[in-house]
Structure formats: structure tokens, C-alpha cells
Image (cartoon, rainbow, N blue to C red):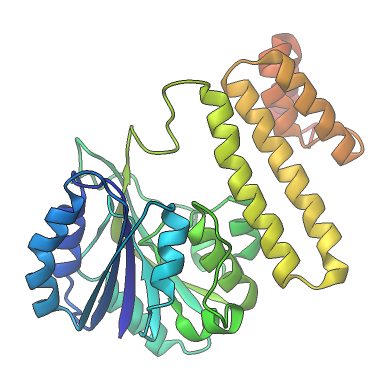
Amino acid sequence: MVSLIIPCYNSERYIGRCLESVLSQSEKDIELILVNDGSTDKSSNIIEQYRPQLEASLTKFVYIEQDNQGVGAACNNAYKKVTGEYLALLDSDDIILPEFIFDCRKWLDEHPSYGFVRTNGYYVTEDNLDGNYRLLEVNDYMKEKEDVFEELFTGSTYLWPGTYMIRMSVLNNLYPDREIYPSRSGQNLQFLMMAAYSSAAGFIDKPLMKYLIRKDSLSHFSTGDVMQKEIFAIEGYKDIRIHLISKFMPYDEQNEWNSKIEKLYAGVYLKLAIKYKNKKLAKEYYQNLKILYGGLPELNLQIDYYKLVNPIKYYYLRILRKLGFAK
């Protein structure tokens, strides 16, 4: 049986469509664990309308209502209820295509030495849900790579809900107490990154989900101190990475990985300052990067920085990069 966790918060516009995608699965041996994280809209009513269909069609339907604690806590609570052999997560605004459960389960059944499998999918928008022209993964190298820990660690490949399925035996070895770091977000990072740390990944090069890009999502702030809100959200993911390194990495490797975290997020903060055209903060972050790197940071970061503070040097560095004189 495959366990599927869906956290839900104020998702009345999306949750029905998401549940329809679960009901449309060709594989019905599913344990759906749906967590309503203190929604104040009509999400609960919509879920109750679907309850008879879910209970009749799926092997098991578990519905949890809780006070608002964040999506990370919602997944943590659901995780303790999982009884399936495999686990997948799905956001309440995303859609799994009809063969997602069947294809992922079949792949893992046929490849017992792999800890999890990733899939391709589509980026879509609310006004173009049928769009099938923008794939999540177009890099053949990443489709073939089986050790994806560092890519997940650096964020250079995606870890969206609905794009992977993990063996519960892998997660049980990592989290024998079924307790993940109590963050308000980042549950995919905790499950998938550490699964990649301890096991190999497969890849199904077939679009099996639709990832909805929402204008009003948490990653698109529009009011108040927008930059500070983004920094606050980013710091949450940094804290998770620090926690995972301290919990799972051998002690003699932790300094190296913590140094990588500091460099990673110094670059993220620099790009954020550039995004909001904050020259003062950009200069502070750039100086911090030079200290962390013991000299100049990687060329792409230099180019990003000088685009904001010195356009002439920006074009000069771009020419050097194009000519292959600078690495």
C-alpha cells in the first residue's frame, strides 16, 4: 500500500481538484492521510463532501483536523499515522496524474535496492492548468544521476511534493521515532534530502504531476517588508539544513557541510538583495561571501553582484566568462 499525505490550509479553491486527482488514480491501494491545518475557509466542508468517495474508493482514508501549526507540523502529525510500504506527499493545490501511484510503486517494486524514485512533471498556472510545455526536469544528467544528495542540499534540483515516492523502510531507519524537525515548512527537504543521503534515487522520465505556480503562494510576498519576509522564510530552510547536518552527518564531516551551508545562504541573501536592488545590503553580503570563500566567490555570483553595483565591471566579467578566460 502507498501512503499519501496531503496538508491543507485555506485551500477551498484547490482541494477539490487535488482530491479528484487522487480519486482518478489507476492504482487504488492508497492510504490517504489528509491534515486540515486550522483552515478558516470552506476547506473542511469540501473535504467532508469528498469523504464518502474517498472512503469507498481508497484502501484507507484518515482525516486529521488540528489548530494551525504550519505545513511542516501537519506532515509530522500525518507521518505518525502512516502504515503503507511507500510514502508520497502532495500539496493541496497540486495535481497528480492518473498513473503517478501505479508507476512509482511499480518502479520501486522492480528496483528493491533503491530508496526512492523521482518523476518528471509540468509547471502550470491557474489560468493554464492544461499546459504541458514546461517540464520540471530537462537535464539528462539529472535524469540519470542516482546520488542526488548534494543537488537537493544546494537546491539545484527540485523536491516538489508529488514528484517522488520513498520507501518507508528508508524513512524508518532515519526517523525511528517518526519525528521530524518541527518547522512550519520544509517537510520535503527533511524527507527527500535525507533519503538521498542514505540511499540511491531512481527517475521516471514521464510527467506524472502538475506543480501549480501560484501568484499568492508563500514564496510570492506582496505586502509589508517583502524582502524581510523572504529572508525570514529562507532562514527557516537554513535552520532545517543545519539541523539535518548535526543529526545525520558524521561529526568529523559536520564542519565542512556547515561551511557549505554558510556559503550557500550567503549567496542566496546576496541574490535577494540584488533582486530588491538594495545596494547597501548587497555590498554587506558580498563582503561576507569574500570572507567565506577566502577570496573572490564563484564567477556567477560576481556577475550578479556587479550587475547591481558596477555595470561596466558586470559586462567585463560576462565577456570573460563567454570567452572562457574566467572560471
